[in-house]
Length: 181
Image (cartoon, rainbow, N blue to C red):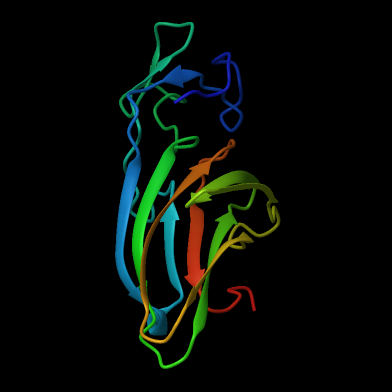
């Protein structure tokens, strides 16, 4: 993993820059089978409050003898997994009698952030501007659609990266309708 260079301890807590290399592994999530009759399905990445307590650490800070890791001093003790590659697997099961289109959304935190998502051979990215006045509101990006015939099950995988500052939780939603309506 490579992050912005150079590292400086003089940056403010929310603008700290880490440049480093860690032993490369994906953070993986096996979401199992989701019946479309039970959608929407929501989960969070980069969120200790939502159960994602893993950190991709330690990271050797380039140009220094310092490390970033959970047992290091602040601000090197919590990278929030930004710029980490998340790998997901899921099966969508259309357990209804009609054809459906399941839509995948990624939501920015209140400050906004940049996301990259890849499924099959398609890679997309977007800068989502935040809703600074309301930390509970997410700006949503509809990045993927999957059409299913009645009774069809679809196994797939995809990857996501939070490609910017801001380690606040990132919301992911799989839904039949626009989650904001």
